[in-house]
Length: 253
Image (cartoon, rainbow, N blue to C red):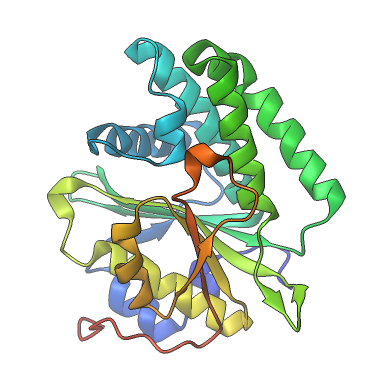
């Protein structure tokens, strides 16, 4: 098990070098304050532009004025970013002006324990409670907290027991660069790293229309996430086993 995880270090060299220049890929871990702010701003901006998004980060923070909604999301994102920085990898693609056009957040997860579960609960509450309460009120904040914990408690299994896995926490591509294989490039690197570690990858899908994309990379739809509040019953989780066949057209590699 690596002590410091890096997607790029564990991905196959030929895949990384084929993608690095074309998609301006680089790793942002660890991040400085400016890089962290850029990540939050980018994901926040893309979340705002998706009309009717049912992603829980957007759903949780829809009420209140724009400043209040953004403040709530800012602190939620920091929970995920902190986890990625401590035991994960942030991949970013930029345009010629240095503006982010695609970003993905990956974490290496050990077998969940009760202590991990309580630690995540405390971290989420202390980091987001006041801002989430101001933006959403008690009911939506608690629903979002329950969803967060349900996702974190869900894990792939091997021989009937939870196993370590790589998780795609978040991925976004700017509208101006969608359908240009940026998301696929990030997925190819993540899949290659997981294969070299002989680990499954897990991700959560708040939009069923995205399932077909991930299936092209060998992910299987595992159905509804156990323990979800009824408000988020459309959330599914997907798992890709190590070295699962990729059906995506990778002729660009």
